[in-house]
Amino acid sequence: MQVPPFSLGEQLRQLGDALDTAVLEVLRSGQYIGGATIVRFEHDFAASCAAPHAIGCNSGTDALILALRGLGIGPGDEVITCSFSFFATAEAISAVGATPVFVDVDEDTYLIALDRIEAAITPATRALLPVHLFGQAVDMERLCAIAAAHELHVIEDCAQATGAHWAGRPVGSWGDAGCFSFFPTKNLGAAGDGGAVTCRDPQLAQRLRELAVHGMPRRYLHTALGYNSRLDALQAAVLNVKLPHLPGWVERRRAIAARYQRELADLPGVQLPTSGGEGHSWNQFVVRVPQCPARSAACGGGCTPSADSATFGLPEACCRDWLKQQLQDQGVSTIIYYPIPIHRQPAYAELGYGPGSLPVTERLCSEVLSLPIFPELTVEQQGQVIRVLRQLVSCPAAVAG
Ligand SMILES: *Cc1c(COP(=O)(O)O)cnc(C)c1O
Image (cartoon, rainbow, N blue to C red; front, top):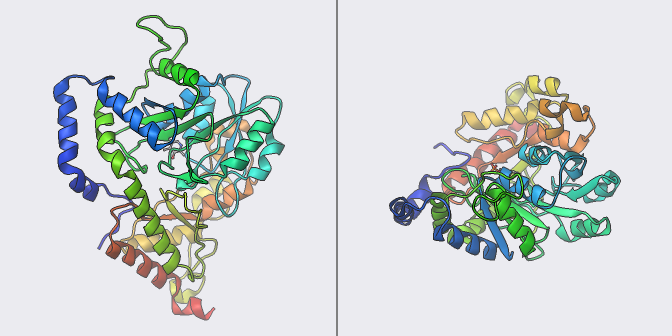
């Protein structure tokens, strides 16, 4: 049996008729841009996030760019974020002309280290951009308190955390703006690219709407240089069908995560993620492989150093890479989010973050491995992941030490 890292097949089967009908309705209506389908989605999505406003746009990346622009952030400004994230988090900051300032992440949560933020604040700092990585919410009470004390904006990167909450309050409702992605593998996925920004302030909502359509408050009047970044009606129709299922899907992700936690708890050499509290929406279940489960020759001889570690000045990743390959050989596909931290990417060489500048982030990039987790993962498939992992890690020689 093959276990994929992600699969849409079963979800499409479950939604089949409803999706077909919704998509055909839009096709036949001829209303592809704007209209009631979009209005309905924006309304329902805002409600699901406990936010007064949601503005649909082209992608999660655009959602970040629109939020930054909407809050007036641009050249000369600094935005504090983390380097252990998808590249778009920092790329959006650079796209508006501002400079990303990276703070290391917390060893246990993999999220921005709150106690390191204040040391990174300078007179040029305008905003904090926390990432709810892998579906786990940052402690937004503490983060917002830091922002308030220094009069900084807060922009939440909620791309991986649709359906997550902190202290019972959904992500995207805490900051000045919340940025969501509907990329197909996210918790709420469209049939292509899509995104949304949530916010409280009606004036910001209006600015965001205008920026997303060429800075155009009314037809052919342009008061700002904006973008062409709309959520189209076909994507909104798909999302309208899927949105009511989101709470159930997130519950399923939580149940899968809980089973991994239970049945892998005593595994030597593999470090499980922290429980993340009840608000975790488990877009990914990310374990760490700090040492080789295969150190002993009886287990197959160990691993060979990887080229990437040397090239990007990162800690050796061969143990994690070895386990990934072994799992793959037995039909279990895993993914590495992310092998190279943003601050060590060639595109950001000019920022000057050398090897060792963000040690926790760099170590995580060499140790993390995401196990299959998606709502339609079957009990049998998850059983196979657990069985294979246990066999690989608990081989007799390793146990004997
Ligand atoms: C996916 C993702 C984005 C970008 O979303 P797109 O819709 O792919 O543009 C931004 N930040 C994080 C953390 C993401 O995972």
